[in-house]
Image (cartoon, rainbow, N blue to C red; front, side):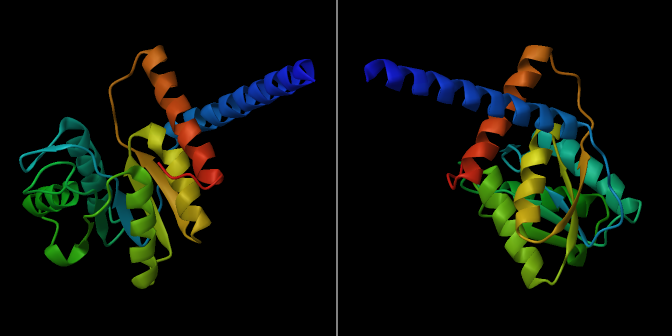
Length: 195
């Protein structure tokens, strides 16, 4: 009996590893996919901010979203992200201020300022889009985020395009660590565990 349990455990572990690897390859394939086309809104995922200033990652995302906005890809920009430990600023507020300082009008910016994770921000953004009767979006983030975010938004009935921000090349080990991490988060989301 114990031997049978060990065999079943080993088979389960192998199946999970194969599934995780398959999803990691999907994450990798979507990481460079830029299928941006006209949509109702640009959705910019938050990242760290430092006392009211965007981190280099957040600034790169915002600059990319700004370029898409200026190209007329969407009439609105939705910035996401909560306080992340900062008592005065949220990531979404810092994003809004950046866009305002680069000529985007106030009425073209929407904020989701409660999210403390990719999942929370994405679900909240989807709810906001539904309330505003928006049906499509272009997600701007780091490439490794795009597969999972796209699937979450599509599960909420939205039409989703992605546009990864330009970034420096990561070493192969670091890149695959991110792909596997997103794959694990995606699989957990599929079974109802949000992270």
